[in-house]
Image (cartoon, rainbow, N blue to C red; front, side, top):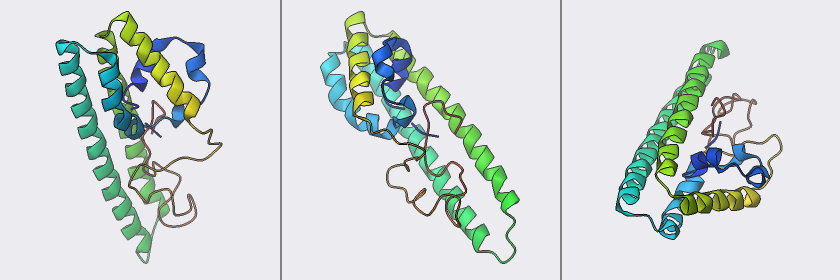
Length: 180
């Protein structure tokens, strides 16, 4: 469960083996979106590309805000249930499964949106995207077995699988195609 890497979706068409030097699953949409504004300037987009990029970026931000809100609600509901006198952990699994499925569907949608942007780029711009993504992958620290929480979220910091806040489920991450 992790990540749009604003342009990561374009990664799928980059085709460069060097792009996969660091686990792509560690890239986060939230992180790449922050870098997207500066990178967009480097691409020298034409008016149509600029419009498409802005629309896609806006849809991406909306999706990520909605995901964060949904996860905060799920977190609060889980905490309330766990604070109850007669908690049944199996009842919480349905929410985790639903979040995992929703995240997988969102990640697929994000990739499609950004692949449409990539399709609108010329060959030079596509190469710039591939180089940008390769650089980002090289900078990403390898995280063996650990998952990073979504920016601004306390999820994932409370002992995954050990009490309140971390049942090993979605825990605030969004993923580049990793089922949740």
